[in-house]
Image (cartoon, rainbow, N blue to C red; front, side):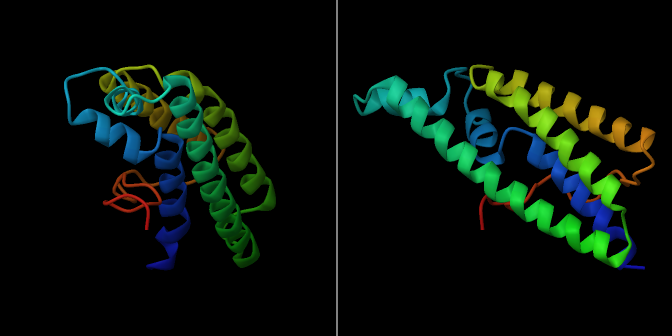
Amino acid sequence: MKNKYIAPSLLLSAISLIGLGGAFSVASADTDDSTPRWERFAERFGLNKDEVRTYVEEERANYFEEKKQLMNDRLSVYVAEGRITEEQKNMIIAKQDEMRAEHSSWIDLSPQERRDKQKEHREEFSQWAQDNGIDIPLGLGGGHGFGGVHGRK
């Protein structure tokens, strides 16, 4: 019974991964200021904003690449176990890549706008999964993504 929910739980975690990274969105949500945290950091320490932004974007890209590989590995295990097909695995990866490509335009959005975009993506992904016969029970995964409740581990 427990194994029945592992694959769908990971798929829901993938939805969370599609969101704009918990550390940046949650940290920004703590303030009413719509200025991105990286920009406030650059101002406070007298750093070049473009260099800081480039660094943040590179780190985010590296983080998501690591998580993408982890998801790919887990999906491969599920294919080997017969929980999903290779075709479903490839469809999931392609959909994630498609949705992730949109995220670079979110960096200048306010925290609320990012949350709204994340919600739209989760709903879109859930509908897409349902349309393609991929079972993703809602409510599993807790919405905390790969890093757990407290960020990267």
